[in-house]
Amino acid sequence: MSTFNGLVDDMTKIFRIFIFVTGTLLSLTAIAKFISAFGNARILQEADPILAIPFRDVFWMAGALELTVSMVCLLGKRLVMQAGLVAWLATAFLFYRLGLIWVGYRKPCSCLGNLTDALHIPPQTADTALKIILAYLLIGSYATLFWLWRQRNKAISSAIGATFL
Image 1 (tube, rainbow, N blue to C red):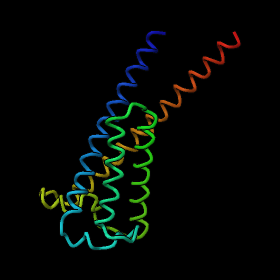
Image 2 (image 1 turned 30 degrees about the horizontal axis):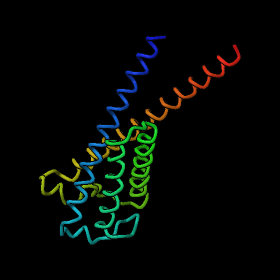
Image 3 (image 1 turned 30 degrees about the vertical axis):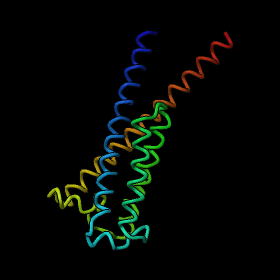
Image 4 (image 1 turned 180 degrees about the horizontal axis):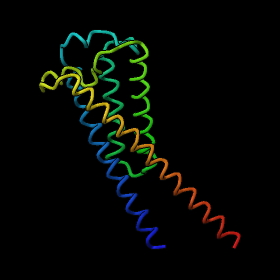
């Protein structure tokens, strides 16, 4: 039984590391969006093809959501809530990207605004990096939630079994 408890402790540590890294990544992308929103790039005035509001407003809203979730990840204690918020946010980003494909928007995602220009990062490179981060957020958050669900079910089964012994 102690081997099982050790495995549970190890997995909990791994998922807590995932949440910490996620909080750090979301903080950085939120800051990048805020910095870009202060800029004067022409794209900031253009309407987002999905939300039909200026990209500047999209950056403010997405940055605020990312910063909020990052603070829950970095300061919160409840793993299920942290992973649930990350899963929700990552799923929203996935649907946004699928929406861009659906409407025929073929440019690299301007998720970091003109910050990529300031850092001399090609837009396609930034877009690919953000797709990798999105996959990391989706896989990690859903894996965490699945593991927590399995642990809860095992605990309930054990409690029910102990009741009838």
